[in-house]
Structures are given as C-alpha cells and as structure tokens.
Amino acid sequence: DGGAGYTGYVKLCDLRGHRDKAFSVKFSPLLPRRLASTSDDSTVKVWDVAQPSAKPVTLTGHLAKTRVLAWHFEMPYLLLSGSWDACIRVWDIRGEGQCIRVVMDHHADVYGLASHPERPFFFVSS
Image (cartoon, rainbow, N blue to C red; front, side, top):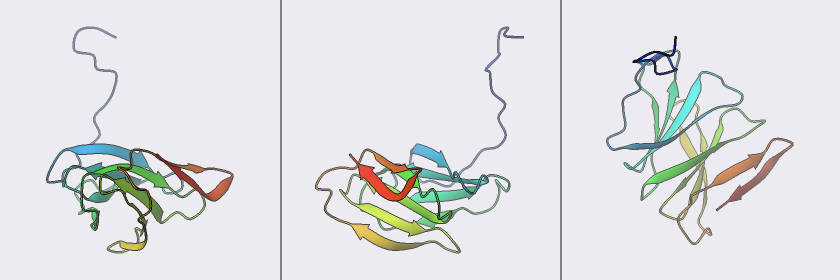
C-alpha cells in the first residue's frame, strides 16, 4: 500500500559467508540460480540462490579487495573478477572453482569489467 514501513521489496534469503563487507553482486545471465559476490576479504563467492543454506563456491587468489564481476554470455561457467591487486582473474566456477587465467597487465586497481553480449570474448576493463 506504500504506507509506513513499506520497503518495496521482499527479502527472500540472507547469503552469509564473506569475512568482510560484500561489495558487488551479479547474477549469471545463463545460470539464473547463480549469484556471484565480491568482498573486502579478497574473495569471490558464487551462490546458488535456490539453496541459500548451501556452502558457496569460494574463489581465492586475489591479493586485495575484490571489486567487480563479469559473466561470460555464452559459456555459463566462466566468470571474470577484478581487484585492487590490479589483476583480472578468469574462473571456471564448476565444482570447487578454479582460476584458469590471470591477466596481470591492468597496471591499476580494477573498478570495471564488461563483456559484449554479441561478441562473447570481448571484455573491457577500467
């Protein structure tokens, strides 16, 4: 009704697992139950929102706060992450998750990552 106490959303679940503040979240465009999150704890977590009590896949390897995510538009299990460690990591999120590529030539904190929906192997960073 829009009255006092109306928030405009319905809370479905809490996802708890980061040891420090979560920073950004992004749903997979191809796996609608998958949500990735970045954090000040330097990890990326991948959650199955249909099973909020399940342990998330924890992706480790960044040496500083993680800030940004980009899902691949054709390969559902590929996720890119950017960090204040000035690198971009490419992850295969299946199973326990595995880093399959590290891009070290960013030369500064990574604040933005984007992929093109019609050119699936074209990513840009800032």
